Image (tube, rainbow, N blue to C red):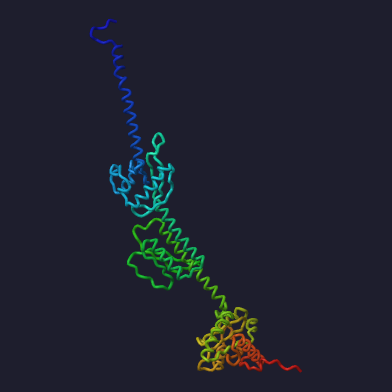
Amino acid sequence: MTQQPGKPSKSTIEDQNDADRQPREPLELLQAQLLSLTERYEWLEAMINYVPDFIYAKDRDGRFLFANRAIVLNNGFTHVDELIGLTDAEIHPMADAHKIDEVERRVMETGKPDLGVEERRMKGEGWLMMSRVPLRDQNGNIIGVVGASRDISARKRAEELMSAQTKLLHDVARGVDLGSFLKDAQALLERLLNGRQVNFILNGEQRQTLADEVIEFPIFSRDGGKHGTLTASKTEDDETGLTEFLAGIAQTVGIAIDRHRDIAHIAYLAEHDALTGLPNRTLLNRKVVALLEKASQAGKSLAVAFVDLDNFKLVNDSLGHAAGDELLKVVAQRISAQIRSSGIVSRIGGDEFIIVLEENQDPFHERLKAILEGISEPLTIDGVKIRVSCSIGVACSRKHGDTASELFANADMALYRVKESGRNGIQLFTPAMGKKPAAS
């Protein structure tokens, strides 16, 4: 086919298109690569900025090259460009800036990372876990430092609360006096709660009126009862886990009170008769020594009386041991009511009692006679009316002995004599009782 004049051939047009296309392909490729890099940078920057951790990079002179949004806002800036080129000395107090510079310079000089170091925040309350690593160029040369830190305030707070609870449990285990324990626990809690008022209101105590609204936690006893309440001033920003912590402290206080009462009960049982609650022989011996010294200094006498119920075995055999125990408790109450604060009474086992009387305006014999008559008053046990008598042997200090052991021995001999003579009476010790009969 003949080509028309002035009109380019098809092959010429294709060659021209190829020529136009060749120089544009590298440009389009570069543009595409730049777009890809820009998108990736934006994505990377967005991700770093949304991370709550603090991330930054500095040059060897300590000037910021990069910082994420968390650092920018924490330091009072609105945009990262305001921070770029500054040093810590231009942002923080010189002492804090020096500490940061010291660590970062060591990382850059040694090439060794500084990882997982816990530090207090320079702005605001709380703790950070800091990590710093060398920043290297493509050839591996150190050109700065990269730092990252994470807020560990919640974890440190939890550790602080756990440590406080552990300390209180150790105090319980060591048997710290309850009053001191509660006082120390209150001071510890108020420090942990930044001065908020904390109170332990135990049963029977008057509740204090607080101006602030309070949160309350029951202090339970081991048997499911309630010793009282732990109260703390309430705030709107109570931290997570604080309620659980205070509930745990209330439980620890309950354990402390239970332990204190257990110890007090054990100490009580060590010196008192479990059935009647009267002092036992151990406590009696200690008290008699003190009373003898007191009487001697005052130039007065002390009477020691052994009391034995007559025919007590018949009550046990006919009515049972429960009735016998009830009788012993009634007798203990009647003796205690008679002597009041002018002496002591002790149960030393079985149906035997020891009475110690201090000298006053009433003669010993008259006071012991009132006790004998009081014991003999009729009573009803399990629907059965009974009357029980007793025998009493007496020895007095300054006449029959100067020590507790002498008085006990002589009063016991006097008791033996009154039983021999028909029971239901009072016998004063005489020196003749201690003499053995002559051999025939």
